[in-house]
Length: 542
Image 1: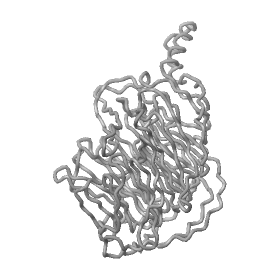
Image 2: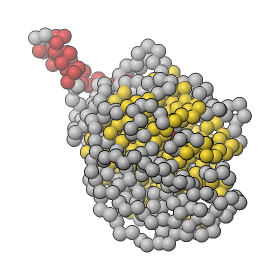
Image 3: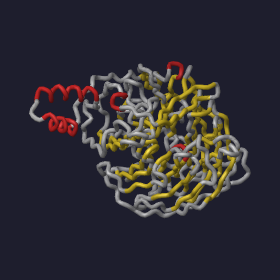
Image 4: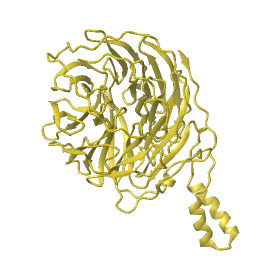
């Protein structure tokens, strides 16, 4: 096992914004001495992320600043309980100068080429998803909406959509087809909907489904909606504030027809799908449940190690899945049932918020945060599934009063590129999005002005996208950013040949999964040609 040293920060350059400097010059005329003084004061009060933020970066909107009167703002905290980690969202309309509220940061050297970035003055980029051609953004709070950004563009959306204009939202896309799903709830949390889109939808949903239940305390999010790799299936989980039940809904992705549903009194926090959409992995508090999407029957279930800020993930063929909490556990199908093949823990660590398995099931990882010191230290761990051995780890540490809680993780198809998102610390001691190769080398990073809330990786690992809030999650504030970076090509490792049995559904269910027909998608051009890996041979769940 090898350890990676902490990244070494360097002082940031603080260039003033051209527009602000121009206005100062106009306002003071020929008083050059006064202009110089105001220039220094303005640059100090509004720190910018210099130090190589160039590399083709493009901002498609104003940098978030003071919210207007009555502006909806929010802040989020992670709280540890004996049962797990709870994230608390607090809303308000506090008028706060966000530029002064954000401390000056020490910036790392850029890793990856920033293709474009989009800043929003009011909305937070709570969720992001990437497919072969587009980045999909889910904005929340004031100006909540879906935005479709071409990868090869400049951050200008092809189209946007919203039913409510404010509230919460989540997004998921098929990595192997032109299909995505957008989930939204209104500001009051009384109206939940899911919509199906393609890149050619031009802002009009192909279909929409209003959920018959709602819970203001459990709003829409990207963890509550999933799309299968082949684009055949959409799944969402919602809760009912009256009965306290939760329901998994499975839809035919082309039409929005309900294929199946499953209701249970245990709260459903998240959902993931296999490549063909035949199996859904539902995160229920501290329980992982595999569900046959053809009929809603339970195929397998196992208890995790804590509830709250958790998101269980499953491989493309359904042979490997991961659970996180106070421990990190990996389960693999042995031809009859699922067996735990990796069990890992660290004192005072939470593995639930940022755990991932690669699509081919070869690699798993987690960004574990240390809750004993207010989330100011943590460590990224990667494991090889075939050998059940740790590949390596990457520790981080910081200072300040804000929590650096890990909140998301994604991988390319073969596990050679894995990205982990966190809220970051008060002084940005590590990048809010960190990207690693399979040797646990830091190969990419996104340094946000505030906290990261979402991350995604393209199938080939060439692109990484992140979504963030304009200030730290622990601060009251609004505004956010979506940023897309391009990585240097990574060498393809020599795979270790292993025979993975096909998962046959024998645990608690009696029904056999019916294969889902894959709809024919409309071919479309790829804006940035790039090599695509061959599909990984995998067993097909029955």
